[in-house]
Image 1 (cartoon, rainbow, N blue to C red):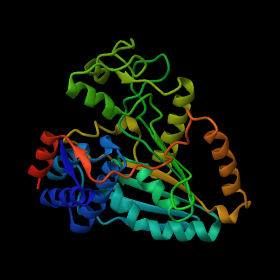
Image 2 (cartoon, rainbow, N blue to C red):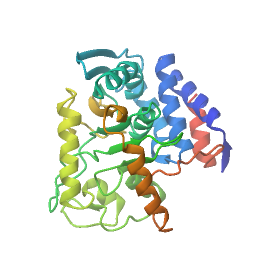
Image 3 (cartoon, rainbow, N blue to C red):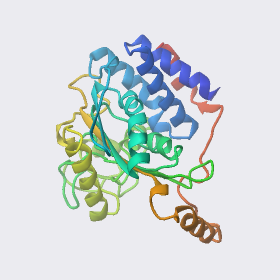
Image 4 (tube, one colour):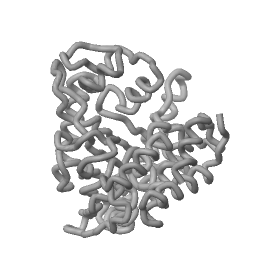
Length: 324
């Protein structure tokens, strides 16, 4: 295993993205997200995605030099058109106006449309919490999830993330797929020649499977059966319908090197606790104290992981450095 600093991961990622056609500031924003994912132990959303980003820059599936267009359609509504570019630069460009809208109105929404996959939603909601806001985010993805009892993929993994601000660090941070598992865990199991647990996926006939290859030919299932299915549908409607982006049904595999742009949507809700009842910190502390009394239970995302250096498999780091 190679021991690599977070700063080196960020700089290497930036250089690789620029070498494949991304603009300087766009590459820097995406690289920052890659490094943060590795720092927090979110391997699927870190360097694991970098080669895909680079291949899709070369093929034109993502516009690495897109200049996002930000508009404020109502006092509490901020929209940004990513112009078929990366979601990280689009979010960064719109963030100042979204923060101002949330502080002014007590609540605001930020809709990112026509964007590439954002990979880690929690990367964005933690930025909102760092500004004292409750951050909730959601995004759709390529269709890979079938409804309960079904076999035809209709929804993406359609994750939701939420971060509640705390004293310095988030008081709660959760980022999870509304599917039983993130698609990346299936593809990583296939690459490693490993089986997957029952309950993650069905094959093309709708039968539960432990074979990752059969799962990729079939469909994932929703987390918690119909409850996760309902949440996934909610994400689909908001992430696609309120951003002007496409449905999961109309997005080809996220990591395919060629094809049309992802054209995905991300939808964020920003809540300023100071504009509401003065009880968020007190209520959160009450819950935290009760949870602390049970050593087997913890609040999601508390404490946050901060890895530096990061352990990266030697062969993987060799591939990454070859991208520059």
